[in-house]
Image (cartoon, rainbow, N blue to C red; front, top):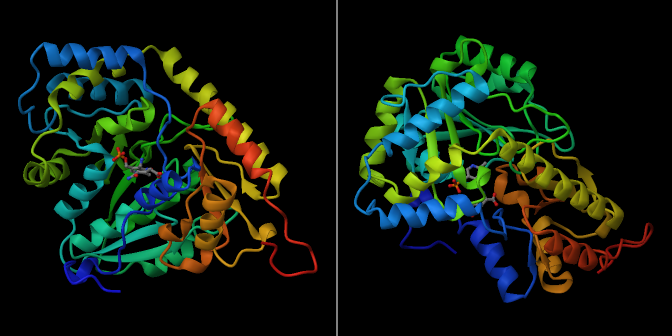
Length: 396
Ligand code: PMP
Ligand code: GLN
């Protein structure tokens, strides 16, 4: 039913699937493998730094573009990890999580009627942000199980109104990490049509099997048309702190900064000071993060495969997409309701991430950014799923 209080443009969007599934998990006393937040705390040294920053008096409005020491730390990080030079004075901004970074970037840059290309499954805030900006979303499906870009379709979709392509690598929810070949082809297309790329790289430090995250801005000729978004929430397991980063050429950064000043103005001062410590972490921190998540990924992949799901092994992020056809449910929403209320494990029905729903309706997304014991308990519960008999109809 339409909600009279919501604007016409927001009518197509319901409440966030993450909030909805977490509530359903809590209401059903289910293990929450739906919303992607760690059920463990971030590093002690960063927490301690936050207490110190509060006691040191960093409690008034921060610099609107971000605490200078944090912007300097981020500039050093991009240089060290990727060889990218960003001027912290003009090209790096701190926003309230990647969510504000996405919203503010899109609403600051997209004009009424501009078209924005989204790859589906997409992170759910992209189409809402484009719509709020008065832009038009055009969708290209990454199909299970390869999630490859159909470049021919992409070329055909681009027209005179196209202004931006939104990319997410490593990709939520599929775990895909875009290869340099894919990024180069995409880059050629972006250059040919003079498009901006917004590259959401919040899972940049979570990749597996030796897969390297390739920032879009490192591809030849793309630095000056790419807006790179990241979030300390993922790297430092502090999703509640909402510290996001935007790196972009000065002209684009100036636009994003203008929007940001009137949406949030400034991000929590003390937490930004504390996060400087995060960026001082030694290289071993990143290696440990990889090993830590690789174990969880392997455990979850085995659990799901043993239960009868068809999975695609993620190369990055902390999510696994699985096909639940073997269990005989009509669609992902039905399946996730059953999973949460009967099996007592909550997961995300990914049709929320598709405009063309048919591509997601036999899939389910599990988050594995959870403690070992949480995943072990989930495995026990998931083993209670009953496979559909081959000849009969749905087994429920
Ligand atoms: N982009 C992607 C791909 C995400 O998965 C998320 C959620 N964690 C965000 C953006 C939002 O990040 P944040 O929590 O920093 O707002
Ligand atoms: N990014 C998280 C996920 O994909 C959720 C973020 C949120 O709840 N807004 O699960």
